[in-house]
Image 1 (tube, one colour):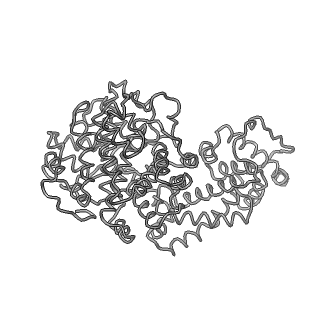
Image 2 (cartoon, one colour; image 1 turned 120 degrees about the vertical axis):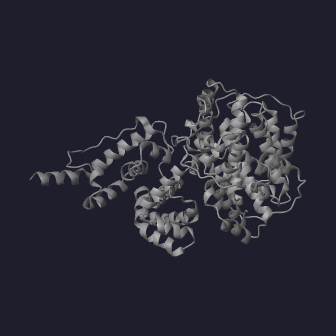
Image 3 (cartoon, helix red, strand yellow; image 1 turned 90 degrees about the vertical axis):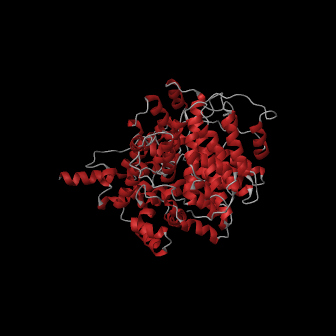
Length: 604
């Protein structure tokens, strides 16, 4: 039925009555958690608070919304189970099938479609949600209570999807097949800045509550030591907030299975992977209260694999990330691997539940636009700008098809798959195949053969450590070159004597006036593609000052867009354009004697 054993809790276990009333049986997803009864209680509290009550959104609409989001994430279990519930509520099988095929054509009103669109964006592209999205919903007639309730339903699906993946639960009924389901379109690469300019703690209006008289805040104080904005932002709906607080405290507060420190590690690492600055800042702060130094906490957020953690804890964090980012790829072997490190079934279950709860909170925070209580680590914020979110955890069949198409075009795909299964010979073959490409990329940025050779080792070591996270969304060579690029750029920044790569205050006025630029037969950038001139162009590029050389390399040789170069270097687009112009002029001047002479010989 699942990856974990089932324990007999007796038919009188109170949450069982709740589930029998809803589904006419105790679902497998519940029975899979019987080794830790309080995990079942937390799930029942969330589902009862979010789905049963009909204070704003009708129960049927919330179930339709839950199934739609579940389908977009490829969560067959939730679609099957809650599709059955919709049938019990009187929704026809044809209506459910139309919903799964395309909710925009399934008979929903235009305002309901707008609400579903928003929740899909929250579920798949949370860091890009803006206040304007919420304002659009208000213009459709939704009040803040309805918006909050819808966001929490989307968060609940994140919770259920993580549980299903981590526990390997078999459907209770004949599994539904999922057609290619539409999701919110991909946003621009750089997340917008929603924070720092609003007086409210979130997109929604909240009501002041005193911790002395408001029961949910008493629970949160006992667990967190303060009242985070996450909870202050939701006080307009005490009923929902109470359900969240009880579930969160019920999972996080006890230390009879996993330590609070380990659970905070899970919350921090998965929040960082989800690009959730708010939760990264909160959990870094909570770790400090547990005696973890700021440097240790920041390193775990930035890259826990480089932190001073036992191998067993790194393995558990690896598992948490996989069930978040690649839920459909989890197998029994992933759970068995945790067992080899000595983790018990109850510890594995609490890891899954903690991860699920984190994904719920991440979704809610991003959907409501909750203001940070603390500043996140600067290193994390800088790294965040170089990453796209784990949708990165695509789940719709359309996205899976696109990944398969990339893999089909990638000649390295078979070797990568073998290397990911632990075949060292396959990884060595990849190293041999791409050593020259990586070295040339490093040389073009660093300009020093010895350092480029040394950095090559760092690149392949990093690739080896992170190969499990490579999902085939680009060619392996593209992924590897991006690691090389980031490695080289970081080395440039670490050089104490190097002219700064950062944008200077007076840079816009800086000028370069070439002393000799004559007519050429071809552009040097175009002639770079020919074998006879490649070495000459590379040698000339290496003579440029670092800040111009890097921009020229990324834009003209790596063919990144201006926006991508700016993102990689932490510069503004105008600064990149200015450096690119100067670098090209410098390169032209350096190459003029050769190309002018070539043009003269051709004319004769």
